[in-house]
Structures are given as structure tokens and as C-alpha cells.
Amino acid sequence: MKAPRFILSGGGTGGHIYPAIAIANELKLRFPNAEFLFVGAQDKMEMQKVPQAGYKIKGLWIAGLQRKLTLDNTMFPVKLISSLLRARSIIREFKPDVAIGTGGFASGPLLQVAGLVGIPTLVQEQNSYPGITNKMLSRKAAKICTAYEGLERFFPADKIVLTGNPVRQDLIDLKGKKKEAREYFKLDAEKKTVLILGGSLGARRINQLIAKELVNFAAQNVQVIWQCGKLYYEEYKHYDEKPGVQVLSFIDRMDLVYAAADIVISRAGASSVSELCLVGKPVIFIPSPNVAEDHQTKNAKAIVDKEGAILLKEVELDTQFENTFNNLLKDENLQQKLGDNIGKLAKENATKDIVEEIVKLIEK
Image (tube, rainbow, N blue to C red; front, top):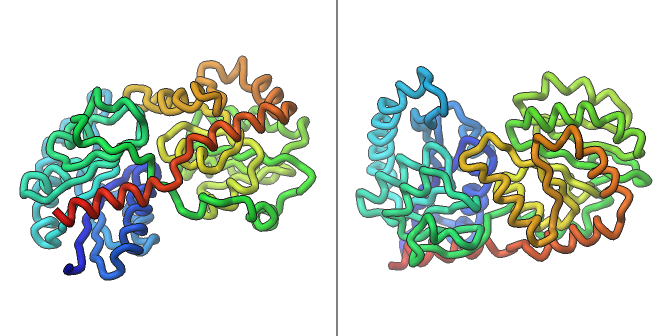
């Protein structure tokens, strides 16, 4: 068999980028001589993160439709046509055997063109409620790998394979990393560690909450690792001077930060939810209400319904967060129960299972 050629697209946020990189890494293990090319949206974070992971990337001039009438929206048709033409040129030049999309603006034009020219396409849907791009792409996709049950409402049932979301392989066993994690983050072994995750770009409402709650955290004698996101780092970095508080724009060693954490406060993006299932720690989910179809709330609710996490909506934070957090901190049995139950929902072999589906498409 000749060395296969894989073209991948996923971007805009870490939640689309890292699953695509995880799939590429697993494919590389299976096919060491394979050729890889990523396609992203110009000026988005994938243009930095993908090369850092060791892969080539080409950019499309594409952006999503805004909910309000803006100048960007009037340019959308022009950008879409430009991106479709550029995607066709990239595919013609690279000649991929299969095209893989993990969501984000650029995956639409790329997979649309790939399907039109007869290249098999695989869509990886991370959320419990699919976005418009993946719904559209599902019509021509050969396979749709999902992380949640019940997506037959949106996709052709005969194309769906329930695999889970691709996650970093270094998260699969964290048991032996606690000591290394404490040393890496210079943590006090006598104190509980609270990890705050607002996503790669950051979450304004969570950052506002944590800034207000630092007094309470200090009173409870906990230490804080606060990933505030690159959009908000300049605004919140001065809190890093407080004892027991570390403010970070981005976390490179997610395996160590998860190993260090005793309690996690997080958005409920699909990748974060999948990672936290593997990690098996007690979690308070604060979903973003500013996403399509409120899918983060649906992601979190799928875990809460199995008694694997606590869910607080943004509108409840001022009245309920402090009591909810303090009660969880004091209740070791509840921490154990949440950690055990979320751990039962982990799909450790998701990346391998997705790659198996890709291999089937090459062998056809």
C-alpha cells in the first residue's frame, strides 16, 4: 500500500484543533510514512498551534456568520466563494486519500469540496448538539464519528459511529504524576488545589467570578491555578501576585495540571468534557450560554444526569456558586462520588476507534 495522504481541518478554538491533532498523531503511529496537511482559517489560532505540533497548515479566508448584522456578514459570501476555490486548489495539489473534519469554519469549504470531487470524508462531531457546518457536511460524509448518543435526529443513522472525542493520550493515566505536578506548579502539598478552565480564549463571566471569589478561596485555604485565556490575560495577570494564586494565559502541560487538581471549575466545551471524564476529578461545569443551540449546557447535562458533575448556569453564579463550591470542598464523599461517576463515562479508545474508521475509508 502506498503511503496514504491525509488532509485535516479543525479550528477556531482548541476544542476543534486538538482533536484534529490527536487524530493526526494516531494516524502517524499507524502510518509512519503518511503525508499530512491541515487546512485552517487565516488569523485563527490553528495557524500557530498546528505547526507547533509538527504539521503543515494552509489557511482559508473564511469566518462564521455573526448573529448581528455586521460588515463581516456582508463579506461572508465573498469569503465563502474564495475559500471554496482555495480548498479546490489545495485538494487538487495535495491529492488526499481522505478528508477529516473536526469542526470550525474552515472544515466546511474543505470537506464540501472533497466530497464533490469524490474523496471520502469523515466528520467528527464533538458536541451533543451539532453545529450547522457538520449538519450540512453529513449529507455527503462517508462516516460521522460522534461523542454522544441520540444524534440520529441530525445525521443519517447508517453513517454514525459512536466513538467519543479524541483526547490527548497523556491524560489516560495520571495516577503517578501527582508529585511531578506539584513540583512543576510549585504547589503546597498540604492544600487542596482548584483548577479553573475557561477555554483557550478565556471566559469573561468565569474570570469575573474567580476574581470576586479569590477572597473566599483564601478563607478556605485552597490554592488556585487559573487559566484565564489569552483574551483576558492582561486584565487578570496582576492577581498572580496573590499568595496561592497562579494566573495563566494557556497551560502547556494539561496532564500535570489535571494531576495536580482536586476540584475543577470548567466551561463545558466538548473536548473539555471528554478530557474531564478521563481525568475523573470532581467538576463544577459553568457552560457558556453564547454558543449555538446552548450546546455546552447539553454537554454538561449529559454528565450531570449520570451524577458525574455539578452544573451551574451563569445566571446562578452570584447567588449559588459560593455555597455550592464550599459544600463540595467540605464533602469528601461527594468529591469521590462525582470523580468516580464522571470517570465511568470516559472513552479511552476514542482516537484509536476514529482512526479505525478512517482506515476503512482508505481500504475501500
